[in-house]
Length: 265
Image 1 (cartoon, rainbow, N blue to C red):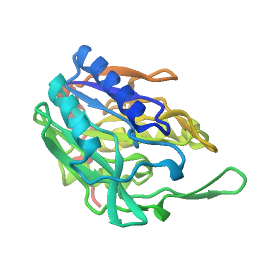
Image 2: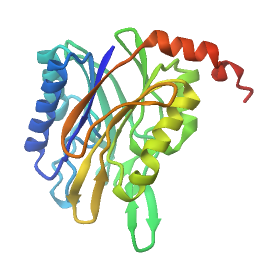
Image 3: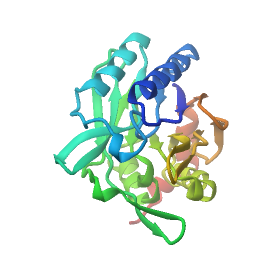
Image 4: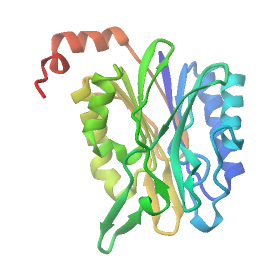
């Protein structure tokens, strides 16, 4: 399976954001990707006051990515978007997976919400405007089991262990808008840890650059193999990086170092 991770700088213009996302997916398809991953909040990452009305699954954003997947004939994991939530005050942060025909294959609502207070640096409470999801999700992509997650989920290893052991995931995906101040110290470390401890490929697609006052994202989208080796990485700026997933290599790692089989808890 050939995969592509797409990196962009979504801002306050949803139409422009979607146009850039489509261009990146076209580059992914042209490069032979079977599966392309976009970042968290690919549809809008700007001031809350200007956010378009949240939509249900099947709305404009969903239909846009369904049509792109159908036109290009590739699997698309559309990062995440603002799904209309359980009440007027809160949305869901939702990832959508479309197959080669543009059909919706799976959806996942972000479980862990970014509530952080670092005096003098960051004050952010995602739970004030976003409702948490409840259900881990694994989807089969061309015969490969892919476990879904979003951004802050990365700090909760129990989710990924469940995706790997109960869901049989061979690949874990992390669309993100990882903050700059934590990303430069933790992003790669956590991605490699999740890959090593679960013996899975990890695909991570991040937002990059400034988005609204006080919010800058780290980028550094990458693919990590089950040994914890970074196979490819997107340089700073919008772009696409490719990697070929070797499932025989994955099986060999799991057989020679059977940590998943040896676990006691």
